[in-house]
Length: 124
Ligand SMILES: [Zn+2]
Ligand SMILES: [Zn+2]
Image 1 (cartoon, helix red, strand yellow):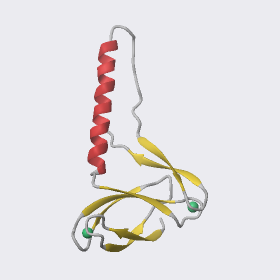
Image 2 (image 1 turned 180 degrees about the vertical axis):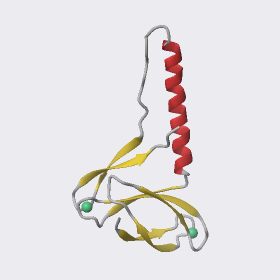
Image 3 (image 1 turned 90 degrees about the horizontal axis):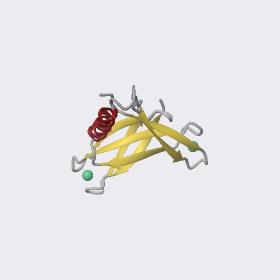
Image 4 (image 1 turned 90 degrees about the vertical axis):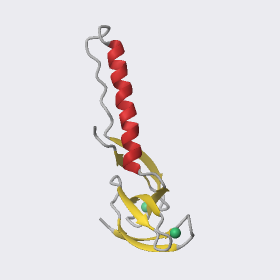
């Protein structure tokens, strides 16, 4: 897991935070909670590095608490599938839909290589 420097400009106060973070190589992705050293605003980052050049990485900023958001989405999905299952009982013998374990995202690195990262979904 390469340790890479990250300059993060707080979007609340504009303060520059210099961080050293352990960033996994794609398709692995890690989630970090960054606290601005100036205003204490908390931001969630998803981090990964390019499997080709190992240098560059992409990150996403968000106010969202990812695990919470993902759990809510996964719950809605599971309920939807159960609803379909119920409405189909008696019509078909068996109805089974595999739930996804992860979401894949395609990224383009500045070195020219396109790669895929995966965000693990919570299992209910
Ligand atoms: Zn700040
Ligand atoms: Zn690259």
